[in-house]
Image (cartoon, rainbow, N blue to C red; front, side, top):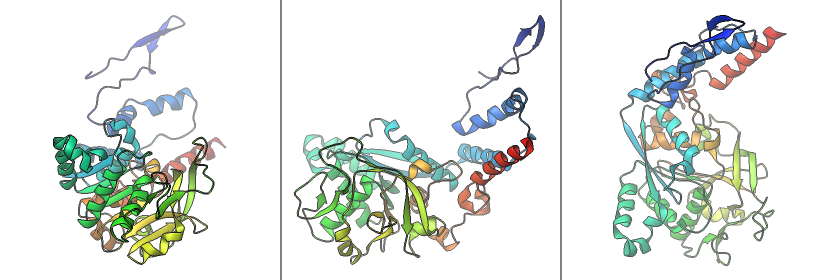
Length: 372
């Protein structure tokens, strides 16, 4: 609807405006909904209704949000990411992943184009069964600016994911592997660079001679209930010059959310690192491999955790942000400038401007102090 007429209600026989009736009409993007609610006076209404003691004034956070919404509407330059997974028929299966990509694309003036690729369509057997699907899948992969292999479970489609990872590695196409995506990057490298043809995860091949991904010690393979490594865990960024560490603003450690049963076999770590496949992030004990990077590649990163869970519109997830920067050809310049964006990108926390999180904390603290 284009507009809304204020309704009225009776109160003890008197007619007064029904200020709790607000108008929320269709807008061009989701990012404009908070701006619409602000314009409708929602903040002022709840302030009066709940007797909240704070001063209503323009806030930097809201101004940044408006800048972001304006940019979303006018961004024209496309950047395509091939999402290679097994649940691509239902895009909601990867809702968090898509939002993380969108947050990152928006921060660098790119319009995100996601090319959904069923990983099974990349496998040689598909070429015999359904050649059209096979060639379409490879065409979408080869025409993308970057490749993302997200998390998942089960054997189906894993060989197609490995083929996509191998193509991204050889063609030096920006790549990000998340959870299973990282584990399969380890498998691909072991097979094709370390020359271990039977290398695999024990999830898919329990009797392999080269178990490069293994069950966690606390995981009972016979029981699927309550056996996952879950929640926020600390990862030590041990290499000073790693791209991932720079994207995380040179932090010594990070805390990200996990959800997995399998992990990289630490006993084979040296075999990989001798060939330039580095484990730049590890757990506190140095026993679990958390982040991988490949030398002499524009952006080949894998993470055991799920960084999409902590991505926010004005604070994009660093691994996803790195993928979008590399896919749009902007990563090297971003790193050379000390991981700062240009002034026109000031709405994003990646620009080096004040953090939205800190502004929210300031708002909460000021309200508490006024109440005291």
